[in-house]
Image (cartoon, rainbow, N blue to C red; front, side, top):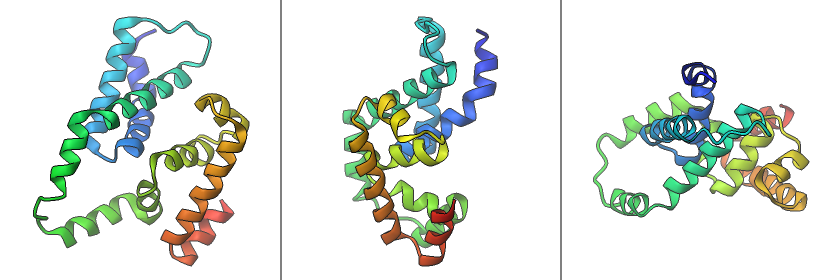
Length: 166
């Protein structure tokens, strides 16, 4: 497999997944670079799953590794004490850039974000998500229901109607 072709084909997709998990553009880029580097160096792909599925799982795992790392926890701790610069302007730009729905999804805990991502963005069925995440189907259904309830609280009623119809 040509690594350049894989990067061209799946790079943006994996970046979006990493961003949803990490909520940081630079970290998402690093995660994707690490995934492609490890994929190229180790050559452990055995063909049992689609390349896209394999790379997606690697990206999710690498994102989890980042979120669990000591560096992340200390950075997040010190970010709370930073004095915001032009906080209103920065927030307005972020809302425009990501949109209100994406912003609401990003405020959810990761266990809800990932099921929403896989269900709505990847169009996976509950059974597929359960197999992919190695969890019972009932857990996936509960998380989807709770994630929708949390989004409903965060989104204005008119935007919630659009999401519900999708």
